[in-house]
Image 1: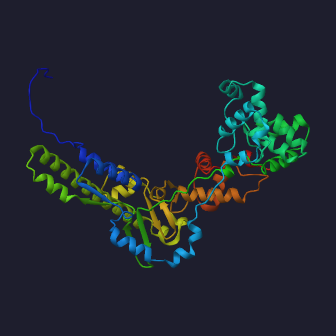
Image 2: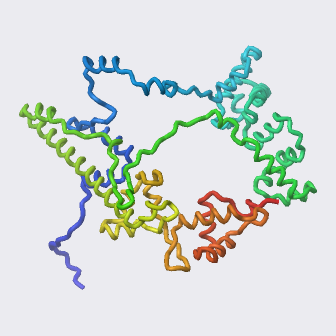
Length: 442
């Protein structure tokens, strides 16, 4: 083996990650909202890139003002009630409406207001009273007195510091005389919540059926008393694709209305290009190239998304004609192999992308599922298996709930689906279904 130093030439090929390639990859995985934000930011730094959204139109005040004043829509007359903004009462407003603050001294009034403003959206108080006393320079007794005032208000359970206190406050507020329920919640709360009821049964010398009755009663209480006064604005999903079935063939179209239209600012370019300034011309040429790269990347994004969508329809025709129950197992690797692109490209293409289908708006990523072996020639998808598990658990005898092993055996015997006990447990947890011991009724 020669260990001499020397110089030699070697020809190699490698993919260089240029800024334009990085940008094209990023645009592919952007959701519609992320793409809009990207284009808006680019429009700020690139004067040659103009954005025109569907909601923004040029207006001629000499014409449009007259036009609008003379036009009276019958729809506006009929739907004027829908234009009135909804006034929602917040939890803070509701609590303050029940209080006559004139009855309290300044120190107590200040403490009550501080505690009310410290409640979370569910009506719980997460700040310690000793911390409140330190912040407001009051005694612990004054802080406790202020908290008692709040806890006496509606909704019952507001001002609680934990779930246990919330449930007990509701029982006291409702004047309920269920002594067994109060004893269990106050002294055996953790055992009760973890369904270790046999220990409670032995210590209180009662039957499991009585604890079940307490459990049913607790289900009628509200664990989040303040949630009725907290509302989030509804967020709407705008689909990226529209998939239609006319009974004979599929049609796939990009839904571009939600995206802003991009235009090249020709006037700006010509105005400053004619100055003859070398630095200005170089700047304009750089921004012009940037504009063309963005347009090319958006077009590539559109083409890739359409190719992936068409291939998904080809693989899942029954899903789009008969419904979600006909979803077949399909992986991103299958799509990438047939389209001769990388698997990561498919992953980026379906990330946070939605399609409007004959059965509603769906996330493209939800159409991919792992393959579960069956005793027949046709395999099942993980989505189908989850549905079967949910149905079996819904139909089970709640006094003798099915274990994970029982579910595995029943799936193989009734549906021909071969799945292990561990997989059943994983899917059950993903569905938010507790174990058989937690589902049991006495």
